Length: 318
Image (cartoon, rainbow, N blue to C red; front, side):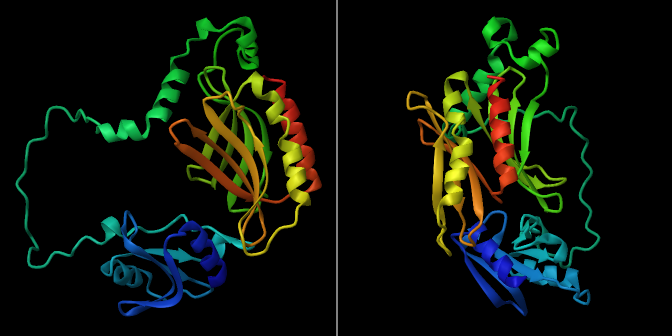
């Protein structure tokens, strides 16, 4: 269990030092993730405790000792493992748990202030925020500002026709391929979805049940149908290539945006260090801002069939 966690943490924190059985203060962590400089919200690093049928440890005292040293805490037990994978996204961040303890101020009471008449506060975002997110904000504005009354008959979506000309106020999933098994902790899927404004997107998402999944949306237009059609052959080609153990490797790629487009988008199949297949969906704008989501999956005959059906049915909507 420790070695599986060690491998996963090295992937999740590539710029950190990950060690087995290292001392922090008066405790020895099963694994320790250390940063060169304190990183928000983890502090100096992450102390990992792997529990296997051992309930004797004082969890609160252990947490407190690590917090005092400026380290976040991650507890792993059997429920967090699935085969050779483990979930590490439930770290107990050191802040604000590491607030200094009061000494000599017991019983101190602050003066009572009358509450303000309004709790609304105008917050001016700094210029750096808009410069860093310019492309995303422009794209969001363009999508939201498209009026349904401007759509031509050829642009009218299947969803619109189904509701007699009235646009839906929510996103619609037309087709979905599950990349995970029912027993997996992390749910993974490739989807073909439609926005409330009638635009179509490929969506790759992953996340544990009950949490907000990590996802990416890559817009697909009728002009890019021939590019989307290459997704099944990309997976088939990757499955035939020999994987190199212990290294990340690009097996095959399908470009989803033509060179005339203002954005670059791709669908890629990779091999991880532990020789598992990884599906990657990504895009980059002219400013160099990129979005990428990747997730592990298994290639099988059933998956080939499901992907081909997924692509064929998705194209019918364009």
